[in-house]
Length: 215
Length: 281
Image (cartoon, rainbow over all chains, first blue to last red; front, side, top):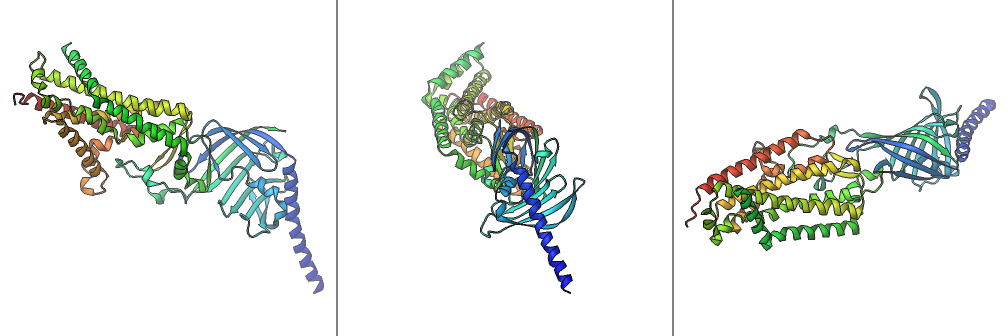
């Protein structure tokens, strides 16, 4: 009986240590890149918004400072690209728990759930789908009190060794979008606007990265 | 030749009336106030529009630029311009009748048709001048003060962001349709002017008709559905269609045809009336 109990405790202990260690490895890999510049093409596909793809230059400085320079107006998730860097910059503030495995992009991933130690902070929950063999995050789901849930998929190419994606697909919820009628409606318009129930509830922002200049 | 001379004389008469400059001065003052307000606190106005989207998204770039400012100016002022046009064009026949110069004018060696058409042409040129001045202040001065950038337009079916290099032709097209709409107002006031012997009547009647048609157009009552698409006021805001993506070309064409149809109809009515007008009274 004692042997069985010891085995159970030991196995729980091992499982609790593994995700933390994996998360810390990701943090260390992230810390190897102190700054870079990259050309980005931002392609929003969001219900109620029509915009053409925009080219931009993205500059990153450790730990989570992003600057975006675009010729015109571009649309990004509210926190830009800084969701993950912010997590990596405060690694001591979370408890990492293994919550399963999943096959993504044809690769086995381990799901790590990050629970904040502080109940008053903005972060509620974060889930990372980690390709442990290559130490790459293939998907993230970050829930904050201010911005809701943001799901991002990451696709890697030439800069995979540095943990930098070639393509990023951010899914945003748009059900809260409302058009202020008084400002938008033409007083003489007689054609009907699209039925609100037919408007999609989710949109995506695809960002293609090319020509990383790592410093 | 005599038609062109008559048109020139009509333009001189318009130029000599102080009220002709009232419209230009009013537009200058109004645009100046709007530009000042936007320069001082334009971002708060934009955030009111984008606040719903900014719960999840972030807009990067210069939102408050000359193209957006020009659009806001047009949206605010295009509703008021008909009054400024009617103030001058509504007086072209009835003013002459009130002063007693119409009898003198008709006794000259020019047909009533040519005389009336020259007044229509002069009214059209004045309307064009008003539109060009508004365009200069809104687009040129707006871009000079606020710079050039992508244009963010809020339509009833969503937000459209147009690239800066895709905007100028839209303004050109928009101003052409706006001119056609205002030309209809000019034609309406000249037509009403044929029925009246005082200046105020046609001006007030023109505004009353615009107000009435606008109310009919906005009332969501099914009984007005069959006539609503044929009211010229329904198509006065068609200039906005140039800022939709994709461009609703069929809708724009329909508006152009309906506005042109109104102009022809009004010219026809006024010719019929003017030929039978008793100038001996």
